[in-house]
Length: 157
Image (cartoon, rainbow, N blue to C red; front, side, top):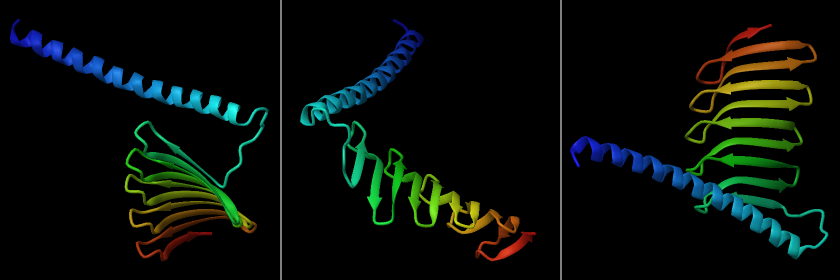
């Protein structure tokens, strides 16, 4: 066989191997869920609930990908990326519910929350400093722009 044909075969083989790896991962997850369902069904016949203070979801490689934790004043669901960095958290506690989104370094970049005095959308820079805040309060909506030191540099109204 000549060079280009070998190269084409190598590319096709690599593509088939990638598809095979994906199928194996999906198969492992489906199998793990099925086994977990069977085990839970056998361990607790007729049970309608599972109770715990914390649930941890791991991928096929054993890496933590999600955590659901109940604590004294609320609970939080955190989703992690393949490197173990937090990427999103949904929490409910005394101040109210909030959704936090994190960048690839695990730093908070956006927050949507509902507090007692109204909802808030907050955008943060790479250092975790507030840069834009949109608030809806009883007195009306408010838009604030902050400098790199979290000092308000513009406000409306």
